Image 1 (tube, each protein chain N blue to C red):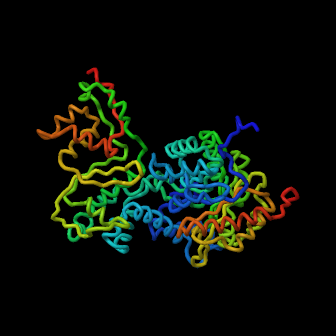
Image 2 (tube, one colour):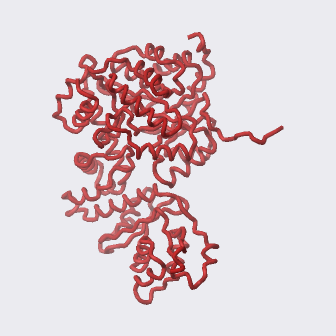
Image 3 (cartoon, each protein chain N blue to C red):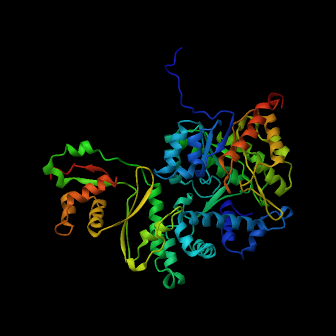
Length: 287
Length: 260
């Protein structure tokens, strides 16, 4: 048996189920090393120079493929791209060599003021040009493709004249980005804005989707709120099944960000996704 | 139709100004739910920034209580826009903001300094890794060149001075603290060193006057002999150096100026 030249570094993120790594689970994860396909972290949580976050991330990166998920690049802001932020992100991608790097289709800053939230865009030609340009800049600078995630939203702009799925498809064409499809966000928006979630899934460009997100929402007054603080809803599991049928097996992430439960609860959700991912009878090539 | 910049500018204003109802004209009304969607965004933005302040200032939160802290956080958020996409950068001026609030003078005069200590702890937590000091390399330095050596502190090191025993206030308010809970303000002021040790634990320790001046001089990258000049007559420099080396406070040294 020849082992020389074998690369043991688990660089690519496999078409398996992963979980979002959050600090309350650092020690548990490292002690138990549960059988999961990959880990995903919020890039900004590792923008610090050193200390405990990097200690744990480095050790876990040695054991798992990694996906970096950014919440702050604000690709939809009308202002120029934040180079300082992009530099910090590049430091991180060079250090940890993640299999996937993703950001959100949103904006979060204007005139140097940061709202530190994922805010919705008007889906217009102008916004399309802005996002495509900054996305291309970011991809060129990082020297790699970025996956863009559809966000949940609580309002729609009268100015929007492009359906969200087509907006995403145009960005793929213009910038060569990939899509991170958040099935929970599609469901939340479908309920909040009164459209058909299944139709969204059937219209997204199939070959561009490279990762799926699953999470739980809360109920607000007349709105679903995307809190990532609950188990995945049954309707969202059904949409996930539909997504698997259309896109085939894809890296799938369970996210939990508020009221973070014990690691076993998170792993239980991951296991549900794993069963679906493994046993779904795919007809991806027939779609 | 507004440009993207105009729309985002108006959106940001509407998030912090409840009376900015003209923003509604930009929204599709047929999908507006029972609760106005702006309320959701206002809550999210406030919640995120408040959560950042809570994480950063847990001792201030314990000292002042949930309700008071939330109000103070909201007041701070109104006057201090976030200037970074990274929430870890938010809240640096919170101690100065607290100092201007009434409660501080009357009941909690030590609150601003205690909060300053928490910001230092936050910086120390995220500071770069360094060390340990290469003791063999240090041993190879000629003894007569020691005075020219410049020692480097661990990047997490922060020095603070307060008129109150803020190190004790910090310690007794740590989760899982066991020991004497009372802190007497008559203990007086303190010089404090905050740093992160090799096991990533944050250490907050009181220094005597000579230690403080010694570490402050090292922080300015002064040579060992210049450091010695700044210390009180009769200070045992060797013992001070040994102390900081043993605790991992010093992680490196440079000798390039030895020829001078």
